[in-house]
Length: 224
Image 1 (cartoon, rainbow, N blue to C red):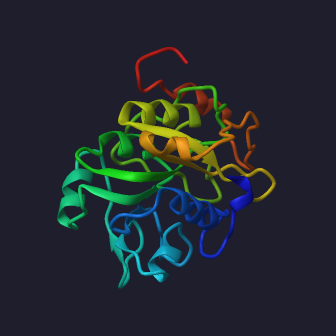
Image 2: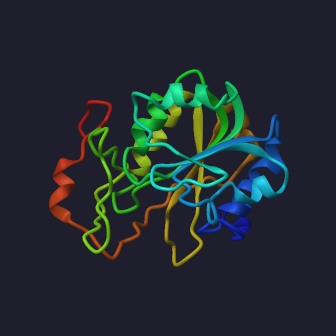
């Protein structure tokens, strides 16, 4: 899917990948949910909104006409979706909160997006199944002390996706193989795609506190 990457309002070419996914699987209600959008000026679903889609934008630090200021946790995510009248089945879910991303997707019950875009921690080997422990108050360290202790490995999301009925599709590689987001589709659609590859390379970020690696856990209770 790398050849379809295109940046309009997204950060790393996600706009083009999302467009191609729905070219192949079609749309239903053209409804999206994205949290971690900041102001909404640069995110994965702004282009969809421009093309007539409807949905819900949420962020823990920003609020404007289109963005709801909400700090999501495992404990409130389902009631928050209900509050905003999210359909039980909808086309696209995008998660980018630099923290409890794994736990948010795992905790989502009764809601089945057809496509999931989720930021993963590319500092961790894709072969590892690791995430930060759940902490409802977690916020990634702010610059200049920001480090790479956040989120989960690609391997953790692939395993979670399988358990929820999704198949891994691809990651974006737009800028110098700067892997950021992983794309998943409901298992019933995976036959419409080919050449699916899990990246072996790891994008080394500028800031990294290696001592925190020991704090990562396997969310499924296995050794990773």
